[in-house]
Image (cartoon, rainbow, N blue to C red):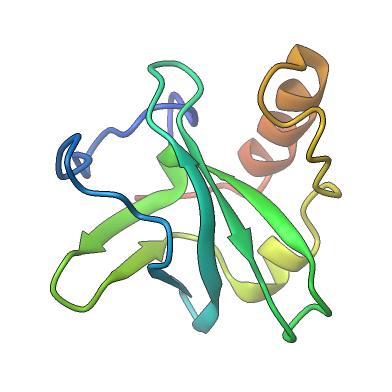
Length: 118
C-alpha cells in the first residue's frame, strides 16, 4: 500500500525538464485518457487526467503516489488503478484541487480505500 499518495516514490519523476502534460495515461486495464495538468510540489504532487470520451469528458485528479511508471519514449504514464477506480473517483473540482485541504483529504481517503499496491 502507498504510504504517501501525494509524492512520487518508487517511481521518480524523471526531472524538472520533463512535462507530463499531453502524455497518455494507462490504467491497469487500458488507456484512460491524457495528462491535462500536473504539479510536482512535494506533499501535493498529482496529475489531472482528461478522460475524454471514455467517461464523457470527466477529469480526474490522480495523486503522484498512484503512478507506477513514466515512459518518456512512449509518452505514457502508467498508474496502479483500473479504469473503474478512476471513473468512480471523487468529482473533479477545478477550483479546489490545488488549494483546498478538505478536497485533497477526500481524494486521499478515496484512493487509500482502493488498496493501491505499487
